[in-house]
Amino acid sequence: MSLHPVSDQRAVPCMLMRGGTSRGPFFLESDLPADRAARDRFLLAAMGSPDPRQIDGLGGAHPLTSKVGIVRRSHTPGVDLDFLFAQLQPNNDTVDVTPNCGNMLAAVLPFALERGLLPIAQGTTTARILTLNTDMQCDVTVQTPGGKLQYDGDARIDGVPGSAAPISINFLDTAGSVCPSLLPTGRTLDRITVPAASPFEVDATLIDNGMPMVLVRASAFGITGYEPAAELTANDALRARLEALRLAAGPLMGLGDVAAKNYPKMCLIAPPREGGAVSTRCFIPHVCHDSIGVLAAVTVATACVLPGTVADGIAAVGSAACQALSIEHPTGEFSVELETDQSGQVVRAALLRTARPIMRGEVLVPAHL
Ligand code: NQM
Image (cartoon, rainbow, N blue to C red; front, side, top):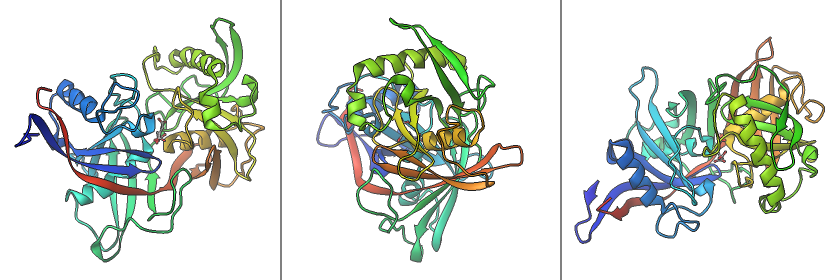
């Protein structure tokens, strides 16, 4: 952090990156205050939170554009890079570093190569990345023909216009990221009694294969599950019932009181309509996602291949040890390749994302912060 020479602002080097279907500034850890409270004050100011429009910062007035990536060379043997993801919000002053974000993760290696943390190889460059939020490791490969980062390409991901170079992510250990285990209640299905103004009971699968999630059938909430995301976000009665369920599920998942937390995420499922494995509408956790999060898709796909979950009888899945599952969402689909062992446990998840640098320079915040 340095004082801006011609003003009373402080300047911090930053790259604004799109990672998958998310966007946010990326920083080198060494450019940020070491003190956590000071770092969080800086991030809130940089993003313009709290403010619904984030008019005084870089945030895009939506949870998916209120994200920050912090990167450093790893100290862990066998690991190249450490990534800390921070979820901010337009409407409050939280800086949550508990959950993962597989979309922002897609931009970590390009950012690290841009900032010279690792050498660029010929053809493709692969790095092992440790997500510090949940101690999760993955291998990421980017295209580097001729020793230069390539962002242009033919890979398309739903939720992002156009096409770009593919970035492959191979997750090595996702089970029980924030929850104590993959199935924190020890069951694939729970009947939950939800205390609300009008109490109700609902069948749900409480699961965490990279993202703590509550899966329920859309039909249990009187909707089809094919409604547009904006229509569901505008449905206050539905959101109130989902929030009551989320608050009841949190302690059952070993997450304690989740009232002020960004997880578990809620996912309404319905039979696939486009030849995929299942149709989804995810709440993250209060706004309906226009597509689906990366680790949310891995977690939903995992529920689809486990017998006895709420997806049983809804999801269309095969029985091969390695299969690609297409998770349908409001703006298309998300393909996840899952590998299971002989006991049916998911041992590997692979997927494709894209990323692009949008701006590089310095973000300015008031110096008194
Ligand atoms: O699930 C949204 C996103 C995410 C998180 C969210 C994500 C993931 O789409 O890995 O990427 O669940 O808040 O960016």
